[in-house]
Image 1 (cartoon, rainbow over the protein chains, first blue to last red):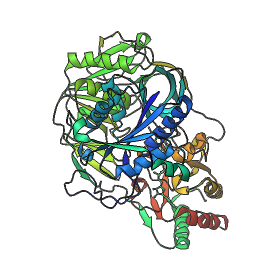
Image 2: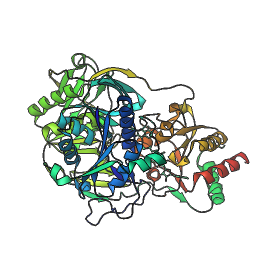
Image 3: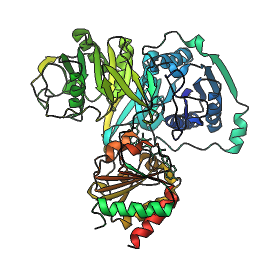
Image 4: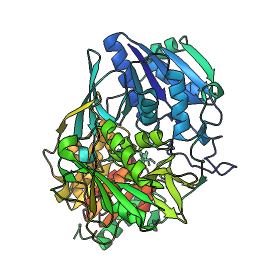
Length: 256
Length: 306
Ligand SMILES: Cc1cc2nc3c(=O)[nH]c(=O)nc-3n(C[C@H](O)[C@H](O)[C@H](O)COP(=O)(O)OP(=O)(O)OC[C@H]3O[C@@H](n4cnc5c(N)ncnc54)[C@H](O)[C@@H]3O)c2cc1C
C-alpha cells in the first residue's frame, strides 16, 4: 500500500495579519506557522492506514524552506519520508496550479491512497484535493468524517449539512479530503520527534513540476471593513464583569 | 452575462438554497438557466428560464462522476459565461470537477460582488481577496447566506430533460442522521458556548456554570465537540444546530462563518475573547476583550450574588 498525504503550512489564525507589499497576500515575516488544521486529520488517518496495512507513507508539502518545519511534525506523527516541493511563490498560485503540481509529482508513483485536508485555513478554496483526484483520474471523496479500509476498498462517511452523513464506498486508488473531527490526531512523542530527524526529506524544485500556470489571477488582498459596531469592553476583569452584568440586565430580559 | 445555476436535491428534497443562486445571478443580468438532478413530478425551483432536469429516480443519490457528465453536456448546450453553485457539501464537491473538465478557473465561497468583481474570505474572514473574472466560463461557489433573495422566488421554468450514462466505481450506500439525543438547545433562551479558547476539557464546567446562573444551557463550537469534550447535540453551526436565543455568550470562539451561521439570529450576542480582531466581533453586541478563564467565573459569581 503506497500512501501520500499532502499538507500545507499556514499561519496561526490568531495572528494579527498585515497585507504584503504587493497587495496580493498577507505579510509572512513575523507569523507563527503551523500545520493546516484539516491536514492534521489527514496525516493521522494516513498513519492509521499505514499501521493497519503495513504500507509506505510519504508526506508532501509545497512551499518555501520553512514548510519543512511543519513536515517534521508529520514525520514525527508517523510518516516515513518527506517530499518538499520548493516554491517561494506558491501563495500566488491558484488551486488548479497547486493541484496540478501535486498530480504531476504523484502521477507515476502508483499511490493507492491520497489524503488531503478539505481546505486550507488561509486560502480556503476547498479545491485542491478534488483537482488532484480529477487529474489523476482517481475516485475523489470530499469532507470525510469517517474512514474504514478493507481489502483494497474504503467505506467513508461524507459530512453533509446539519451533521447528516452520507456513507460512500469506493475501490482504491482514491483521494479523500479530510474534515475536522475525522479522528483525534496524535501528539508526536519525544522519541518519535528524535526518530523523525533521521527520516528522509527530499526536495524537488517546484518549477520542474509546474507545467500549467494559474487559471485565476491572485486578486487584491485587503482587511475587511468592520461592520459589527458592537461595544468593546477592556480593562480589569472585575470591571468588565460588572459592566457586562449591567448590560445584560439592561438589554435583555434574561435576568428579569 | 449568461449564468448557469446548479441547484441541489438531496434525500428527495429540493434544497432551498437555490434562491441564493438566483439572487446572485440577477446581478449579472436576466439570462439564466438552471440545472437540477431532481424529481420532475415533485417540487421544482421557481424561476423563469430553462431548467435542465435529470430525473433523480434514474440518477439515484449523489454520484459526482454522473453529475459532472450531465453538467458538461448542459454547459455545451447552454454556453454559459458563469456556472454558479452554493458553497455546500454538494457545491464544493462538484464544482472543481466541472472546472477541471472545462479548464475553467474556480472562485470559491464568494461573499460579495461589486462591479463584477468577486470577494472571497481568507484566514477565517480576518482578510478578504477581491478577484476579477478574466476568462469565461468561470465557476463560482457562493457562501451560504451571502446572497439572500429577499422575496419569494417566482416563475415557472421551462423544463428540458437531460440524461447521461455513467456508473463509476464509488457508491453512496446510505445516510446517517445527525445525533439528536438529550438536551434540545434550540428551546433554550440563553446559551453560553465554549470554544477552543477554553483550552482544556476541565474548563467546560465554568462555561456550564455561567449557563446555569443565567438560566440557560451550554453549547459548543465544533473543535470542542470534535475533541469529545462536549457532546455533538450541543454543537452550534452549519453541521450542528441553528439557534436563536435571547442571549448567546460565545466564550473563546473565533467566529468562523460556519459557527456564525448557527447563532447569528440570536437577539443579543456577547463575545468573550482575548483577540479583539476575532471575527465574532462582526455579530457581537458586546465584546469583552478578556481571558475567559478569569472573566467567566467572576461573572458567574456576580450573577449568583445578585
Ligand atoms: C464544512 C464545515 C462545517 C463546519 N461546521 C461547524 C459548526 O457547525 N460549528 C462550528 O463551531 N464550527 C464549524 N466548522 C469549523 C469552523 O470553521 C471553525 O474551525 C470553528 O468554528 C472554530 O472553533 P473555535 O472558534 O472554537 O476555535 P478557534 O477558531 O481556534 O478560536 C478560538 C478562539 O478562542 C480565543 N481564545 C483563546 N484563548 C482564549 C482565552 N483564554 N480566553 C478567551 N478567548 C480565548 C482565540 O482568540 C480564538 O478567537 C465547520 C467547518 C467546515 C469546513
